Length: 246
Image (tube, rainbow, N blue to C red; front, side):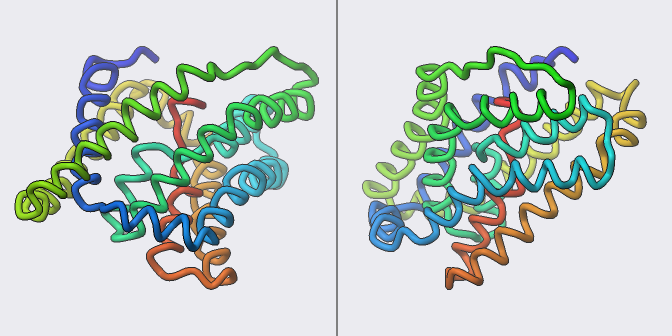
């Protein structure tokens, strides 16, 4: 499937704007709270990096999906969250600062762990291996350009013009919802000839993986004594993965 101009060009611009808006809801104090009380970051990172790929192995075996689908399921589970997960956390009124920290930390760690899980899945389900290497500097560049830089711009705007930042918060939520809707429509349209076959082959396993990630995040958050907003952030980061990396 080829990417449409809406996805390849428009989406990064839209995400950059959305992340500026998300930055307008944050202050340095929000990130300081995450650093001072790192339980949410530790729980979320461990669950993302180790637990979710194991859950994917279990789901693939339980549902006996085709080998290629099983490998894809493990790969997507081993990926970090992304800007989309940050947007979902904003819409769910979760802890945005924790979500961003989890996105960045997991993205950097998966440079090492994702190839390991991908090869384990290839070996287990297909009896083969590949030389899989994630581009370190490209990953850092994307994180800086699409996450850290716009968030920093948004936080700067909030510190200089707090009234403008407060007014922009609701606009960002609406704009983000519209972008998500357009993205879903564009993706479905791009695979319109295969949509029913893809849903039949991978739909149940994918839905179960997403639901399991959200459930595990909420459960782990409650067990670790996290606040509701922190638990929501962890749950979304586990349930909404960076499909671009996958």
